Length: 248
Image 1: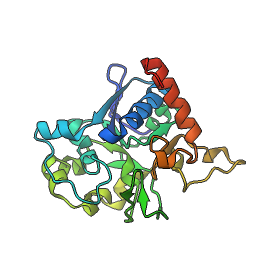
Image 2 (image 1 turned 90 degrees about the vertical axis):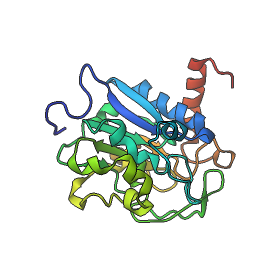
Image 3 (image 1 turned 60 degrees about the vertical axis):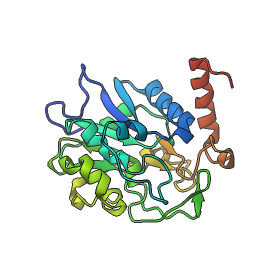
């Protein structure tokens, strides 16, 4: 970890900030994602759902939803630096993730020389739909924005204000066009392991997922109940429900 003055957003008195995309259709996915992080984390974390209705009520989000937006957080995710007061480091992650490793291992990869860090996938989905029938779009740098470590105080990220997030194009935001290529750091793919795309090599432990991303759709959708790693998610769900006193 290469940082200065504890600027990763985590100190003994201040938890590491994690913002998780929230969609009412996927409340259970959010709860299980949150549980999987807190259960395994060896450092304090502060997990906040990015809820579009709350942001609208606060005057931070006002753009109309486009036909190709498969979730309510397609664009609101980019408010992460603003919601962090443009200080320290914070993470955004989609709610359709299941963490299998200690988030501190990811925090240890943070390097202050970058404005953002993410898994730099080369991903072209084969499916035309995903989740519960949403259109599966194809574009450069697809899934890069689904899990991002933001250096919130970086001068370039100060431009990610509500005005920019509400008016800029999907291409500008999802392709990180406010940044130069050298300002985007790389994270090992196992931290955004795409179910149905990435593969585990049995003889290579470095290919074992640390965070599974059910990008096509997860077991909380009927159409994806038998997807790869469904058993891991369902087991985590059962544990979450048991701890929360929720009957199956």
